Length: 145
Image 1: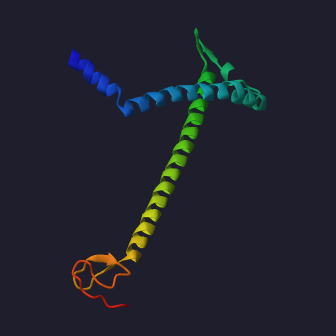
Image 2: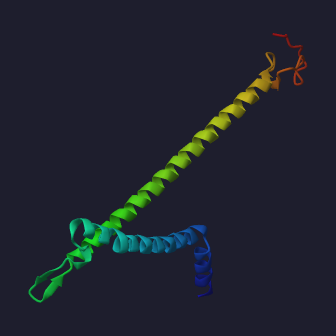
Image 3: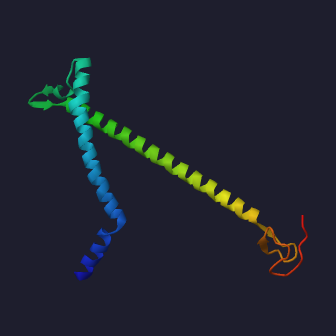
């Protein structure tokens, strides 16, 4: 039993579990905001334009009331959440791509600077400073170019 709790403690303290928990909490709060936006702002505005409040849309079949207007509101909520998530992921991917491009460019510049400060000894093929007149490895006298 002690091992079980030890393993559980190790699992729960991993970074990915904490990240997931934070994501779920923020997602719940974000869902509440979008639901409020749809229920309190978008649905009434659509009601003004179309003359209908979605939440009030219902049909009576026998003894059962189908409130399809609430379903329409839920679909609007889903579409808005999906749109916002799409925009966030697209922006993150663009930022990641830009960062990777910048890192690759910086690496190329560093390699270019490194190449410009070194040359190869024609006798022992060691890397030596570009201004060297004698190879420190094989002591050969180098020709000036």
